[in-house]
Length: 320
Ligand SMILES: NC(=O)c1ccc[n+]([C@@H]2O[C@H](COP(=O)([O-])OP(=O)(O)OC[C@H]3O[C@@H](n4cnc5c(N)ncnc54)[C@H](O)[C@@H]3O)[C@@H](O)[C@H]2O)c1
Image 1 (tube, rainbow, N blue to C red):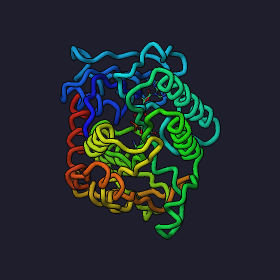
Image 2 (image 1 turned 90 degrees about the horizontal axis):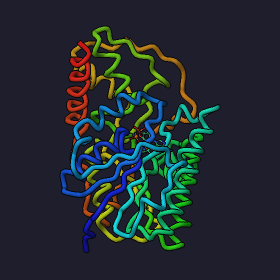
Image 3 (image 1 turned 90 degrees about the vertical axis):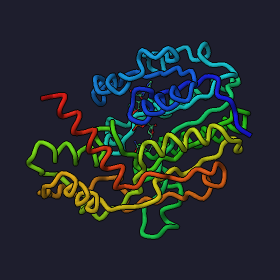
Image 4 (image 1 turned 60 degrees about the vertical axis):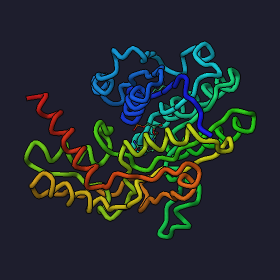
């Protein structure tokens, strides 16, 4: 049985994935309240540009505020579905002093939002978790253990545990463990964005973390949005978590050669040593989400990379 979405509250609305989710919800005729604090961790101007197509949409309201400072209870009611995507994302910046931001934006903000959502009996509460909750290792079994190897992963696993305990209290929580998402508007700290930024000026030099054999399950952003909406429309037990992946893994060296082909130039690689918290391989288990919703990823890495390439070219043309 499907659920009619009367209003969506999307946190992290100006971010990479959040802005695509906002657009898709508006395209489907849903009224959307977006919340974002335009965290300067990366360019707030880039985030504003992410929302440029929707800012004047009659069914869209943007609340520019930090979740930790908002009166959330006023915003929520039983007719809304919460899509909680706001976070300090990114593994590398969660080490050292970055951990405080990860705690504030991932853990504290989530607990506050879950508390208010439970109190006001929101219809559903879907939140972004991450492949970073899993462990490291050579075998699929080792990679499936919930045993994060970065401070960011620790916050995301703690968020999943909050999802379980608020689920047990009656909030319809669903955790979405996204696997390396890419596509137009990808965050600037992520590998494909860094590769295109390096390639497009013409002299393709790239500082490679690790030896490039590390593999990732890359997931195109429209597949992530479709999976997120599919989960919002089906009944699964509160406290459930699902992997959301693109269906194929590729090494970073493999992606470099894909991008070399796309841009038509060779990459000069400088190895800068392995990065702490960077797993050897990630691989999503897609059976549970397919069984629950029928969703499967549709976009091949080849098509997704071409779309991201076009976006980077367009961004560059705006600067000329
Ligand atoms: N991009 C990926 O590959 C990936 C993979 C796994 C999980 N995730 C998760 O998906 C979600 C979205 O990721 P993204 O790549 O779009 O990141 P993003 O940084 O582009 O978007 C996050 C947005 O949240 C906002 N934000 C952060 N803290 C906030 C707060 N306290 N109050 C209000 N707004 C706040 C930021 O300003 C930003 O616009 C995050 O929860 C992230 O951890 C992303």
